[in-house]
Length: 115
Image 1 (cartoon, rainbow, N blue to C red):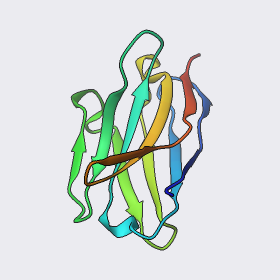
Image 2: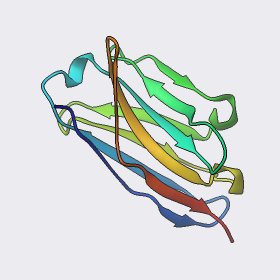
Image 3: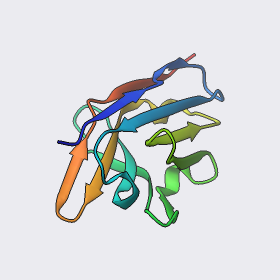
């Protein structure tokens, strides 16, 4: 069974930075496509950033140049460095791990950008 555990959310002022981290259990870490999604009330969950097992990265247009996704094989974790945060980045952030037809999710961590 794959389990994902996020950490690092919180309250930050506009223009500030936060770093989210997600530890992924299981033996197939090197094979997963790892990603970060976010969701606000009344809206569908949307992709923020993802990184494949060969290091290719994909970002939502709204976060390009501000967010960076990375994977740490030693810690078996996927991180999301968020800089120049805006109020519209406020959401619950979820990490995900995809392998073939299966997608596994973390429990989510709240990020609030407010002055």
